Length: 400
Image 1 (tube, rainbow, N blue to C red):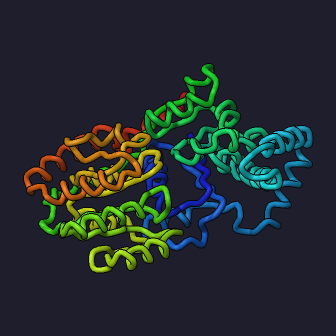
Image 2 (cartoon, rainbow, N blue to C red; image 1 turned 30 degrees about the horizontal axis):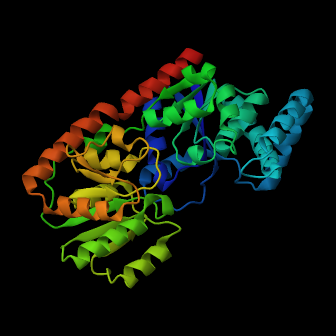
Image 3 (cartoon, rainbow, N blue to C red; image 1 turned 90 degrees about the horizontal axis):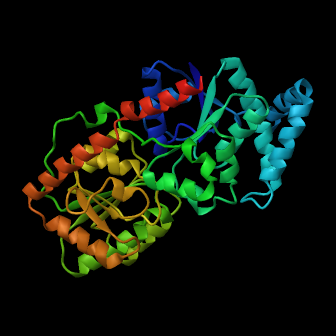
């Protein structure tokens, strides 16, 4: 079966889970076409992402002028269907997070995507994220393209379900994948009961090559690592507040912020203000292999997120036998268990975060090893990429 994947930006440093999913589906016997809006000129640090970029077709690479010819061709070939879809695009722009001209652009993008889907012979198209990427494949379907499905990650979809017309996207979809039971529950909030059966739980997964490595003992150095985009929802500013508390208490620690993002300058300014430069290091964007090395060089992963779906980096740390310190928001408590494989604390609670960090740093090696082994077993049970891709494969084949 030939299927297509459509993503807003691909490949991307923070989208390695999509790459793993595509490659796992190819191991299941599918031919997978990659289509993305952008990403042809993005800075990449992984050789695997470089390979994926060579396999991807980019809708916007030719600029806005490149969309005119596909739009006119679809209009001439099937004018009634085109104008019906135009009306749908205009409705999607009413009381939306973006004004209606954006939705006309999505229609033009859908015309180009439709032609590529038809040329490939796609039997189905799957999108990641329930925002504009899903709207484009929905419009392509309305123009006569194949059935579509999409994966909802959160938290963006749950922050503005009415503005992105999530209900309409689910109603027209063949099925919808949520990455956690929590995510499924949020979709149940916004769609009619008659569509609940469409909503499936398909976890993001890890390749076995990632976790099939010899166990590495936690270091004696009092080091913690936070991996993720430097942005408001990941809570790095709160993490620095907690680090300031630990420093004032005389607790020895090192903190690595692995990643980059729009808040880097603000975070660097706070590090300087709190006199934490000797204790806190920012890596910038790093490859998957470097992320693994940073996790293995730390006693635990700390992720004080304010909003999430279910972070892949938590799975990665647990697969490397590292406990996790994180908030009990969204799907996180489905994976992390307090006292067994990590520490859970309320989002936004700086004192509880500081206490969890101090407790982790004070634990003897045998306790960290026990918690790491429990983390490893837990993540293998729930997040093997071939197991999760097999779920998707069964849904795709049922549609065929």
